[in-house]
Every structure is written in C-alpha cells, then in structure tokens.
Image 1 (cartoon, one colour):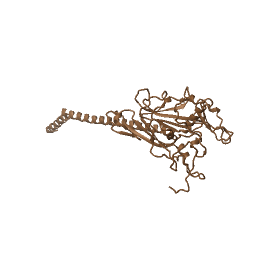
Image 2 (cartoon, rainbow, N blue to C red):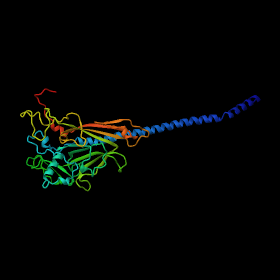
Image 3 (cartoon, rainbow, N blue to C red):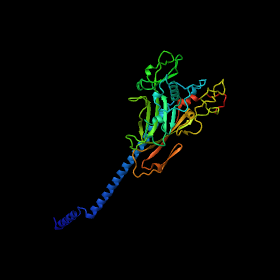
Image 4 (tube, rainbow, N blue to C red):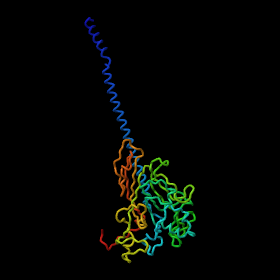
Length: 402
C-alpha cells in the first residue's frame, strides 16, 4: 500500500473522531426544545384533565336534574288517582248537591293522624280531613305549614313546597309492591251496591271488607300516598352547604307514629324548586265553576255542557301560589309546571357566573349567588290526568267542529 493512501486514511479517521459528539451549544438547544415539547404536552394533559372534569360536572348536573324531575313527574302524573273513587263534587254523573267538598280553609297537610283518626268520637274532623285528602290532589306553598315545621326542617328560602296525593298504583302485598303494614294508611273502594261505604281510608288494612263487583270477593287495598317535596339547605350533614331535593312520606316509618316522616334526600345539587299551577275555573259555557251545588247542564236532556263545572283545561296563565293558593284554586288545579335550578357538585375555580336564571315568573340573579358553581334551569309542564280527565265532556254534535 502506498504512503499517500495511509495518510488519507488517518486524516479521515481523525475527522470522524472529531465529529462524534455534540457541542455545548447544540446540547443546550436540544434541552430547550425538549423542555418546550414536554411543557406543551404537560399543558395539553392539564387542559384535557380540566375539560374532562368540567364535562363530568356538567353530566352529573344534568343527570341530577333529570333524576329530580323524574321523581316529581312520576308522582304528579298519578295525583288524584284513588282506585276508581271520584269525589262527588268532581263527578259529572252525580246529580245532587255534593256532600264531600273539602273544608275551607284547608287543613294542614302534616296534621297528625291522631287528630282526625276516630270516626266515632271525632266524626266531623274525621270526615272533613278525609274529604280534604281525597279532594285536593296537589298543594303548593312557599312557606312551611305549621304542623310540618318540627319534621320538615331547613327549607331553602324562596323555594316551594309541593304536596302530592294518590293511592298506590300497585295492590298491597302483590309482587313488586311493598307488603301491607297494618300501621300504614290504606284505601279500599267499593264496587258492590250492597256496601254501606263508597270507600275506606284507614290503617289496619286486613280488617277492610268492601267488596268487588260480584259482592263476594273482597276488594284489594292500596296504600295511601301523600308526599311532600322541597329543597333543603344541606345533604349529608347539617350546614354542609349542599342543597338537595328531599321528600317526606306520610307513613308509619320505622317506629311511628303514623304521619310525615323525616325527609329523605332524593337528589343533591338542586338549588331552587318552583311550582306553578294551571287552574280550571271556567266551564265550557264560560260560566265560573261552583262545586258546592249539583251539576247544572246547559241542556238537561243532552248532557254535553256543565255550566258550573270545569272542562279539564287550564284557564289563563299559570299561577304561583305564594303563601298559599285559595281554596277554589286548589280544587281546580289540572296542570303543574315545575322548575328546577340545578348546580354542579363542585365549583369551577375562576368561573364567574353572569347569567340570570328564569324560573317561570321569578328570576334568580347571578349577583345573588356570588360563587363559582355552574348552573342550569330545567322545566316541565304536566297534566293532572286523573283530575282533568274526569272533567272532560263529550263533543256536542250540534256544535260546529273546531
């Protein structure tokens, strides 16, 4: 091999050796680029995490509101169902002066059972209270009734209280229906003309003996339901600051007495609860409703238009009852409009709420809330099928089609 070739090989090896590493400047630039990339990835991760958290909060908020609305709606649609029983004052087939118009003023919904439970020694109070329970399917107030204050506590200001009444849709003791408790309040209706009572509303269900249509078999019993809904200012422990929609049931409870029990939390995060009612106070003929007298028909031979009974359709705008709706208003409620203001479970740091929330006829100002929670309003309008349906009359063939 020639000398020139060996020198060239040595020169190339030296150059390769000198180019095998990074200079300090190159290393610093590489580290800087790595820091920028890692920082961008970290920021992306944090943003995705925050977005997922906010999405979870929103989903939870929507689910809570839907659950709350479902609880209330499922109860309202059964309001006024009493296993075939219809009060005389609301029965278009009853042609005498009704004898079961509820008392005016209406009693306290939390009135203890012991104050009206004896049909012998307290006959007037017993009958009047039964007429009230079966004649007024829903009540709405924005203040707590006096007899409720000991049990139904910590109601949020400027929110409503809703009372819903009906018989249980399942028969006591049947599959998927709670067993009969002789201490609870049950209802039994009669389908036999030989029975002396149209219905019974008492505890001790096994002693009830009203008969079916064959006048031999005993009618089944159904638990009487009276639920009270309102928003309480705590959920898990008192003063925890988490509002919740709660429900108190009229029953015997674990140890009695028969009456409204301690409220149970249905859904947390419900901050406002407002209820407006649709009132049917005008008949098909345009005359005012009067349930204290017998049904008056526009045509006594063709019963198409009762002039002093409602037609099952709300007249005018929906009404907020405030302290309490009047006696006449509550007897004529045929529809309910429910508004819920739901907030997220956790606050969003740095979030500023500038919205105003409209719940029917009232507006909740964001300035009054002054916190970092996100909120949303949910609403639903419901027809009281069992009340409005029995007021409908057949179409008059003598009138032109609408």
